[in-house]
Amino acid sequence: MICLSTTTYSYAPPSPADYRVANMAGEAVSHWTQKALKGIQALQQGLTPTATGPSKSSESVISESPKVRSREDKAYDALAEAKVWFYQVANHLTDEQKHRLFKQLDRLHDVEEWEDGDQPVRQSSFVTFLRTMMALSPLRRPPASGPRRWPNLGLSHQGNLLAVWGDARDRVTLEFLDADQLKWTLSHVRPDGQTVRNAGIGPALDIRNLLSPYNPSHWFDVP
Image (cartoon, rainbow, N blue to C red; front, side, top):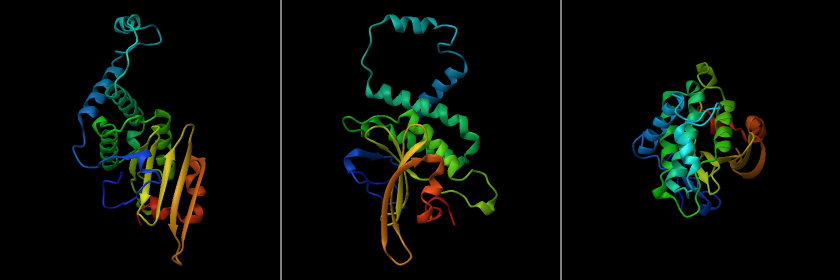
C-alpha cells in the first residue's frame, strides 16, 4: 500500500500497486546523490567518450560481453542523468526547492523499497516535469506573484514521474509523459460542497489553462 510521507497530503493513488511515493524522511544527500555528483564531475572533466572517439576505458567495455544490469546500476544511472538535467535549471530554483527535489529523487531510487518490475525515472518524463514546473509560474518572481507550492513526488510503475498537490478531498495529480505531454486526474470540491472529478491529457506547458475551470491556483500557489 502506498501513502504520502507528509501530513500535508493524504492522497491515495487510483491503483496503489502501480505507484510508489518518495519517503520524505532521511538525509538530504544520500549515497546515490554523492555517486551522481561524482559522475557529473566526471562528465564536466571530459572523462567519458566524446564525439571524436571513445576513450580507452570505453573501448575495453565495448569488447566485453554484454552484462545484465542490476537494479542498482539502473537506479544510479537514471538518478545521475536526472541530476545532470536538474543542474541545467538549478539557478531557477530556490534552495528549499533544490533540497526537496534532491531528497525526493534519492528516496524514489532507493531500490530496497522497490517492488518487482519497478523502474527508475524515465528521463523524458523528468524533462517534462522540469519544464512544467517552470511553466506553472516562473520562480523568483516579485512577491506579489505569490510563491509556488512544491508537490509530493512519486513514480508510476513504468517510470513516469508523478506530482501531487492537495489533500484527500481536493487534489490534482500530474503524470509527466514524453514530449511535453502530461495526464491529469483531479478531485475538486466546489464552493457549494459538490465534488467534481475529471481526467485528461494535454500539453504540459498549458496546464494552468487546462485546469482553469477548477481554480488551479489553490493547488499550485501559496495564498
